[in-house]
Image (cartoon, rainbow, N blue to C red; front, side, top):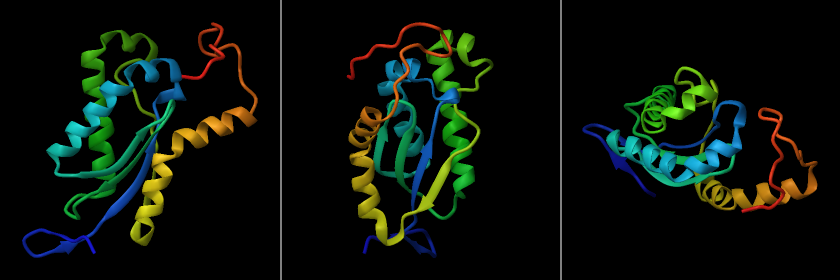
Length: 157
């Protein structure tokens, strides 16, 4: 069993986290995917958080994180979403016109403890893009963006 330790503590705390950009806007998020991944990776390294698996989907992010017990999950989510939002708006100043005053992420998030299911969750995150694509094939597709009124590309990347 993987165990980490602090001065008087041995721990194995893994969390499955899902959060989304405001209004789940896909056009902007798709263009910034690589940059957002690097920003989140750097922020996790600063707090010594191990990213076991992560996937940037078109309108949300899945992460399987190993977080030391000295941090609460709400503290880490506030840190990740708050700092990444500031960095994103510093690097991409034109986003303030679509997102307002530095509000890039939705207010909430989903979190679940991994426990013995860490391997299953890791596989789920790896295959999330394929599952989303299959679900899109079944569901109705909008051909006009409700936010901009522009036609949406029908082809998948």
